[in-house]
Length: 311
Image (cartoon, rainbow, N blue to C red; front, side):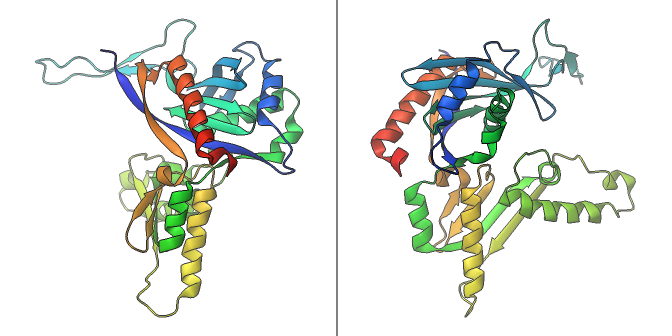
C-alpha cells in the first residue's frame, strides 16, 4: 500500500487596488516568456525557489515550486545497531540535483488561488509570483494587488457573537527576531519587540554560553493578550483586543496564533481561514504532483458551489 501524507489546502484571493486586475492572465502571459526551469528560478531566503512545472488547462493555471539550498548536503542517520553510539554523516546531492527543503503547489483561476504547502510556506508562492512579474516587465503592478486570506464566515460570526477574551501568539525566538520576510505581519511586530527584550536580557548573563543565543531555534516566544470582562469599564481594552484579532485574521502570513472567545472556545489560525485537509500520495518528502493538482481543482469547485468564491 502506497504511503499517504496529510496536507492542507488554503484559499486566497488576489485583491487589486482598482479592482480591475486578473492575476491569472498576468501569470499566463509572463510564463509564455519563461519556458525553462532555469528562467523560472529565483533567490529566496538562504536558497532558491524553482518552478518545476507550469500547466494550463480547463481555465486554470497550475504551478509546482520547490525551495532548496544549492549544493547543500543532507545528514544521514545510520540504522539502529548494537553499537553504543554512532555519528550522523553527510551526503552531497547527486550531480545536477539539489536536496529539496520543501515545495508548494498552487492553482490560479482569475483572482482565486488555492495553495497546498508541502514543507514550504505560502510565502514562497507569493514571492515567486512577484519575482515572475518583476522579471517579465510587470514591476509596476506588484504594488497594485495583494494576495489575501479569506476568513471562514462561520468562525468570524462566532467571534462577533461571543467576543474575544484572549489572543495567543507563538513563534521561535529565531523567527521572531530575524527580518527575513518581505512582509511584516501583526504577529511578527508584536513578538519581535518581546524577543528583542529577551535577547537583551540574556545578553547580560554572566555565562558566555548563555549569552550567545542569537540563532537559537529551539527557544520559543509566547505572548498572551487577554481581556478581563469581570472588571467594570474597560471598553477601550475590549475594542483593542478585538482589533488585534481582526488584524491577525487579515494578515496574509498570520499563522501561529489562537483566539479564545468569550465562552472559552479556541479558534486557531487554520480554522479561521478557509482551508481543508486532504490525504495525498507520498513522493519522497513531498507528494505526487498530479494528485495535488487534481485535489486543488476539486477544492476550487467545492468553494464555487458553496458560494465562498463570491463572498
